[in-house]
Image (tube, rainbow, N blue to C red; front, side, top):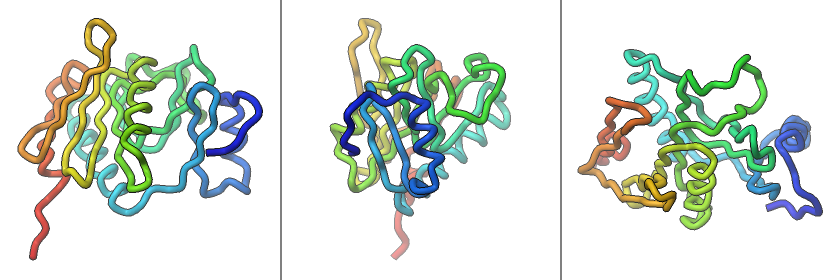
Amino acid sequence: MVVQERLFDVDDVWRLAHNPDNENVHFELIDGELFTMVPPGRKHGLLATEIAFYLRLFLGTHDIGEVTTDSGYYSEHDRHTLLGPDVAFLRYDRLPQPPTDNYVSVMPDLVVEIRSPFDTLAKIRRKAEVYLRRGTTIVWIVLPKQEGVEVWRLDESGQLSSEFLGVGDKLSGEETLPGFELEISLLFPKKQD
């Protein structure tokens, strides 16, 4: 975490991210507090690629939105929070117009965060809440060591709820991505001896 003396906003992060001195630094912002992260490792990258692949495959026959990896998202009503989910899905009808090369000014519909060895579960769950309270409908927290996924949502009363799905279960796109299912076992194949 970077020590700071003021609140940062999305424009500050854009400038920092494009400074040549910060070439291998990833930034996120929660309520004006700036966080720095190192690029994720191999296993993390493989899981993100795999999930993005299955989402893109589904969208090939259900053209309702787009999938991104490591892109910046913020709510247009909160320029002091910017997050870069490992994988995200956003419906076309919610995409800001006209398209820009800058960060996306709406939170994704579906977010995938993969726990890295240096992440605490509390930190990742905090990010899940931030996403959900700013417009995301489902957050999947992928837990490689447990070979499972925590599925986070807000219930009808605005309370956080979660469930753990393991290798014998399927992820569902629910109402956010109707018809999408992914067997969790596809993310964690058995090792060959």
